[in-house]
Image (cartoon, rainbow, N blue to C red; front, side, top):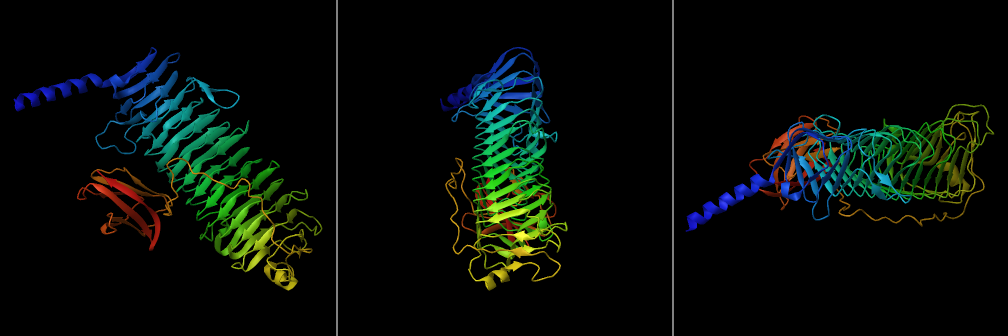
Length: 552
């Protein structure tokens, strides 16, 4: 009797599996719904939704792709899952690896998303509560968007072999989504304005978001987002961009690089970033760029040759007006260099740089701020407004280091607090003509006799759901696949031939140590028992990457 029951049970399972799998390839030339009953859908060859038709994917559906296969959307995709029944686009391999399949491709024929006046989705192509895993084999992105504008909400885009999203179009909105674990960029972007809100971009080895070109028509926005463990966060030709209420933590390289103009960086938190300045502004030509109400703390740049070692600001180029105000800047370090480096290209207009109502305390370096500029032979030209700031940086040799040549603009920096009211003390923390006769003069009287009170009304932060501030720092290090089967890959964007990978069990006992010989090292692990492990990547004894590995 027991034997008969087993045979019947096996037959039922086989029939059920056979009836639920649906193979897909070729043209989709009708309005079509992929249902949970037909799941998983196996893309056995490239599939294309034709123009004028809608593909609807129901909650809980799994779509699996064969090697190098893609799904192209020339019509309208409606893929709306739920928190409990997410829609999954993934590899059809038994042990998935990054790059197992090609991409979801949205062409210029696909139906754009439509929004109301409040910016809420109304209609058009949408992916909501969707997971896109292990794509990118054709070296573009796991999601490739050309001249169209789909909407992404609560999506997880992970473990690809290139970029998460490759975008070239009019406008992109990514809302409440995760883009994580990519050996290139999280988002490679060129086109019109963009919106990222409530997003997490994590562990992208060549940067979170790179703007290759922007039309500047309309305003781009990054709000309430979280960036961690990326090598660079926002880079490229930004223009008319607002970055607000976001957290940048444990990234390497410049956190925000602006080469456009009329940008606003406000009410953000920059913490524990390394090997680059927090904010780099280059060549901004439009007036009115603003950096205000940010908390900038515990950032360090040990790369003396990069960005002149600046850990907070590296400002260069011919900007019109740049406003730096109401920031809290503390506990940042630039060993032997300056925390803030200003390479001033005098434009002929007064007060091109305005720095006021900032609290700058406990920073470490040769100087807190250093100014450099060409000779203009106009010592009366007042190019800068530096007023109502607090400078208390006893670990710095100088608060202000003037490298502007004699005969160039003198500095008029009245009305600041220098940590002491004694003029002999202030003379000692300002480097100018009186220290070296080839420099211009810094005039600092009158002085404030007490620290300024900085407006912190918007300096409160809430982390995105599921995010924890892990003190482990990962600079361009990524491990995949995770969970791992018989092997995994350690990717190191800053590979230096001196790194070691060390794996520990939950008791903290070392179970594996491997010297890394290349930036994408394959490490066999078939001898390890299934379970949770913790890893560190060491470079010359310093931990440069760490995290958790799950062994299946």
